[in-house]
Length: 294
Image (cartoon, rainbow, N blue to C red; front, side, top):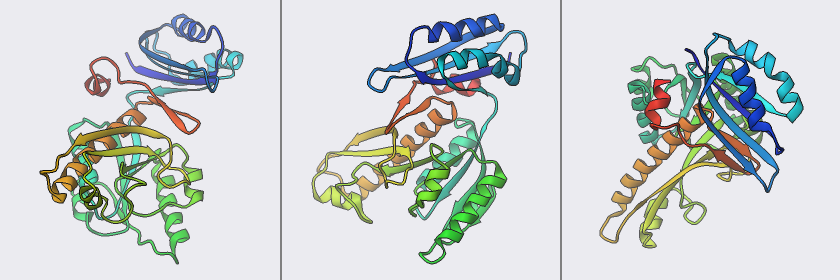
């Protein structure tokens, strides 16, 4: 059986879960995983349902039939084929730890995405990327050519059909226009010392201040620099006995892990925008492996 996923956002009211479950049951579908959240502060309801059609119905037929239910509850909804890999563009500058980690996870199947291109403002990782049979585009960015550079980046997005851009330590600030056009479809990673430790060497600053926890944050990109809705965070403890170089090494590890987890949640439709925050449903029982098998 083909596995599908339904995502729903709508105003809070009684009977939503029952209506969705009844529709799927009446359509010959078997539900094997369901998560929902009712935000009483915003009055919004969020739901993600994984199911299989025992009658072989396709997405178009399911979506068409669901229209009446959606209209009744004022739903924003979408049906997804869980076997369809999301097309992703990775953007990187001169720090390659996140890029290399993502390429490895992609290669072994731990991150089921279709990497359609890597874009950089430097040539450092061209050979690595091309050796993976992935197109590599070097687009230099300066103050003078920034609009033209971003226009070229967006051309690649459109022509490749990319649904998500991942900033894997891409050290250029995106324009407000690009953030608006790709709203909810650009994921960034940064160290969690912001805004306390800004500049080129935050780990050295953290070392000098005796920081005891190193963290990383992955979030959606908005026009407000590093203030978009947070998807995933993590920390690792450090001690006085460790050097600035240790801070950097540990920081790179946690950045890579946090970014991968954020992407994993996004591609499996487990992340919902909720104003300045996100609702992130946990992975299905069995963790990443069960989703990968799907």
